[in-house]
Length: 319
Image (cartoon, rainbow, N blue to C red; front, side, top):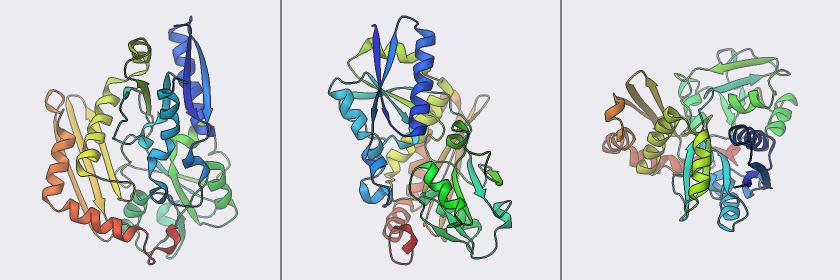
C-alpha cells in the first residue's frame, strides 16, 4: 500500500499519539505515506457532564470507528483505557503499543503531597476509580468533579478552584505540562491502582484488511498485549460500566503474571480487593478467573450499589 490513513481525535494528546504512531510506521515502512484524519469526538465536545451521563468512554471512539467502517481511514489510534471491551462488528484491536508509566499524579500549587493536604481540602478528578481509592485512604477530603481538556483542568487548578487535582501522569509528561506546576507527586500503584489499559495505545483496524494488519504488527508489544487483554477480560466479565469505580492492573515479573483489582463505593466506604497470579504459560484466563472470584464474593451487589450512589445528591460536585 502507498498511503495509510489514521483516524484520530483532534485533542492535543490524541494528536501526539497519532503522530507517534505515524512516525513509527513510516520508519518501519519508508514507502508508505501516513496521513491523519482528525475528528472531534462527542466526548471532546461535551465537557460539562460526567462521561457516564453521555454514554461512557465509547464516545471517545465511536466517530473514529465510523470513519474506518465508512472507508475513510485504515486504522484508529486510541488511548487504550478509552476503548470499550465490546468491539463493533467488522473492527478489531490488532495491536497494543508498549505501555509507558501507568501512574496517576498529584498536582498542586499549594501542597507538596497528598499526605500534606489539610482536612477538607478540595481535590479534583473526573474518575470514580480515583475518587474511590482517594477517599478510602483520605476520607476527610472533599472530591469535586473536574471536566475539560488537560489545559482547562490545569487552568482551574492554577485559579484556585481546587487545592489539588489528580490526573494520569503519562499524558502530562508527553505534552510537557508538568514543568510549571509547583508540586508534583507521582502516586505509587500501591496507592492508586490504574484503570484497564492506562498508558498504552490501542490500534484498531478493519478486520478484513490483512495488509493493514501486517503493517500494524510492528507497533505491538507482546507483554503489554497480554497484560491489557487480561485486564479487558476482567472488565468484560465483571460487567463494569463507566459508572462503576473499578481498578485493575496486570504485571509481569519474569514468568509470573499477576492481576489485582479493586471495586467499591465511590466514597471509598466499602472496598473489595483481590490479587491472583499464574505462570505466563497458564495465564490466559487470569482476568476471567479473578472476575469470577470477585463476583462470588459479592462484586455484582457492590457494583449495583456503587452505580446507584455515583450521581446522587450526596455527591453534588460530581455533576
